[in-house]
Length: 112
Length: 117
Image (cartoon, rainbow over all chains, first blue to last red; front, side, top):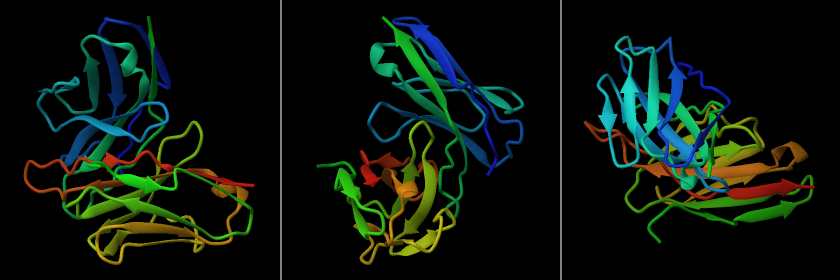
């Protein structure tokens, strides 16, 4: 599975935007970029995914570099409830290969 | 409930004992996954079922670990001769299969915390 690199931790302030980076220099053409987050004492939850174009949903935005070797998850206005570990994962969009391979993720701390 | 349900939420056992962990996926989800997560680490893939069959069991660490899903719904993760190193949170997830624009998003349960003394 292609690997991703994320900072171990980041800190931001409440109500400010947060940009969480992810490097995936060995990404292949069939890999989708998925983001999950894990709140304390809970299982991971899906945040967003994309292939080439930038994506927006109610939780976040995903900005994908033109060469697809990096991406950034954007939380437009962080709240205390966004404090979590954020995982950037490459996943082949193929019926026979659906598992997610998690790395260490980025632990996001939000200051009030 | 509508989510993935895992039981027990906590299990304390002694070294050498046998343990079963149960996962009840979201109704209609054909894919089911097991992960385990040690403190401070990301979830580690164990096994994935598509229907009743194990499509990928490459993450099972050794032959003490086994999982079944006999009717394509509920799954049981079985651990024989437990060791202290098996202590972790065991997470279960389910999803629809990837098809077209469907992402095959995984929905996780809250996990079963296993402590082996």
